[in-house]
Amino acid sequence: MIKNLSIRSSLVTKEQKGSVEYQVCYLTNRIITLTQHLQLHKRDYSSQRGLWKIVGKRNRLLVYLSKRDILRYNDLISQLGIRGLKTR
Image 1 (cartoon, rainbow, N blue to C red):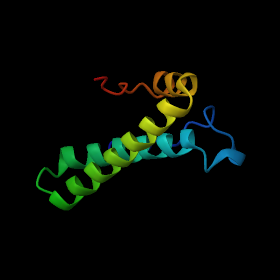
Image 2: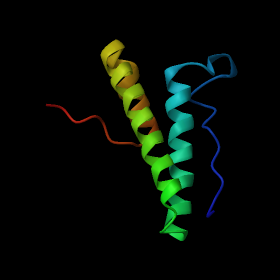
Image 3: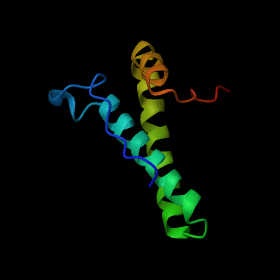
């Protein structure tokens, strides 16, 4: 691994560990670490599958948050530096 990333403490306090923001932040950190792992081990197909499952779960949480509270959603994606959802 290139570097060890921790969950950004400024986004979520300890009391909010079950919140959507915490879960998305945690999944984003796991995606980053798995992506770095897959850059070193290109043929690790089981990790690729796990990465796609994590990306799908994060996407579902972002869809839920965008439907529930668009302001919290916009704030979260800007703080994490990830792209927004595709609009149809």
